[in-house]
Image (tube, rainbow, N blue to C red; front, side):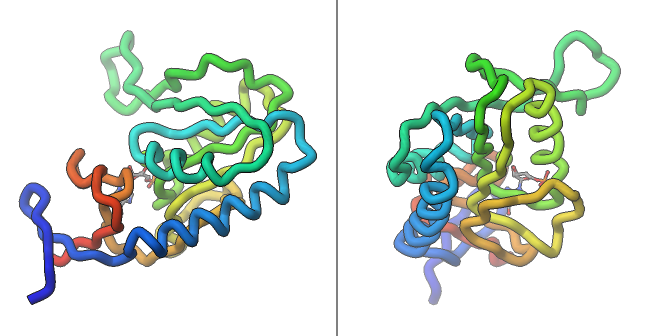
Length: 180
Ligand code: IMP
Ligand code: MG
């Protein structure tokens, strides 16, 4: 029987082994190295929690001087009216005039990345590009251009390499897909 793991109530099997993820990360890093080699100290902005492992591997393959920061979209405390008002926390660097590369784990419908890009645009960076480990083209319904997509998948639900199923599975070094 095929090896599966259990997270909460669901079973998962390996879909993309670590070696294949590494190749995809290397390919996307090579493109970024080429595109940004003459730009003034670009800033990588990782979106927590999902992007931590991707960022760690990606940044080791970057060959130009760069800075790194992590942000989180957190529920806004102060207006108790709605739970989905989110604000950006964790950004200590000034973004004005900077070349910013947002690093995401996965872009699905695009709602989250659109929100992130709109918030960062207000800080007047010189440019913003999006780099995502996974992209779900059949699910995407926004206009924000996604310049760097390491891997494209269908609408299946995946975990591992930073991605979670209700907070479990982030530690896995391969990508797993739900089986039931
Ligand atoms: P979007 O706003 O619909 O693009 O959703 C993006 C967020 O949904 C990601 O940052 C993930 O937290 C979550 N997500 C979407 N698809 C998956 C998946 O297949 N596995 C784990 N999380 C996912
Ligand atoms: Mg995320």
